[in-house]
Image (cartoon, rainbow, N blue to C red; front, side, top):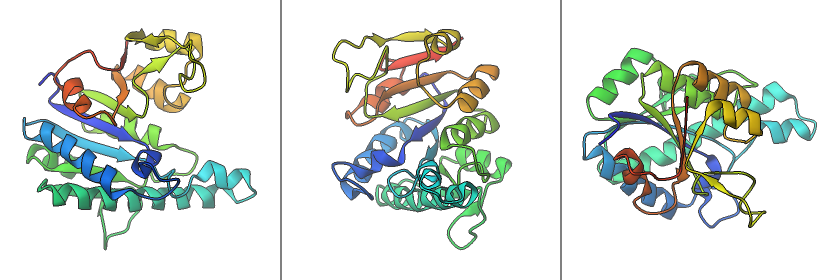
Length: 235
């Protein structure tokens, strides 16, 4: 395997599968098998998952809700998704720990960096819920922050498209895919990879990002083993 320790970023929408909202157990089971394949090779896996399939703070705020209140609701949505993913992983016989930046001691450990690293060293998949624990920060920012804190080798952003394009490939058939692109080129071209805070934090800490299609069977294994899947963003 090319990478020893990874941070996998999944969107909440990814858990919907073919549904319009909520969580698709079939999609969860598929993800669990993909993750099991790489953990069986000794890869240490941490995961940050969004909450957009349940509630998105920005959307709530845009409809008149207090932004801080809405963001806290979004954080709780990520914990719900984390619990669902944890259940699917444990059904696949993968040991896990769920850590939350928002204290919910009955269902998740509080985030403690040293404990998270120790879990990874023992072969457990660590799911980070609750975002950063602060309003106004996205789960992209949480993913980069946690990746830096646990000394991950790379951030793998699993999406429903197979990389970064010149424009949205779902709307523009003429969009061109990048295999490799620098942080500076992403900013210069105005491409949307992560929110600006997360992207800048990744750049400053020289942490590469790979954007790939998580929904294609075998892609996660290929990325971690070093095959040129998706788009790699580095210095």
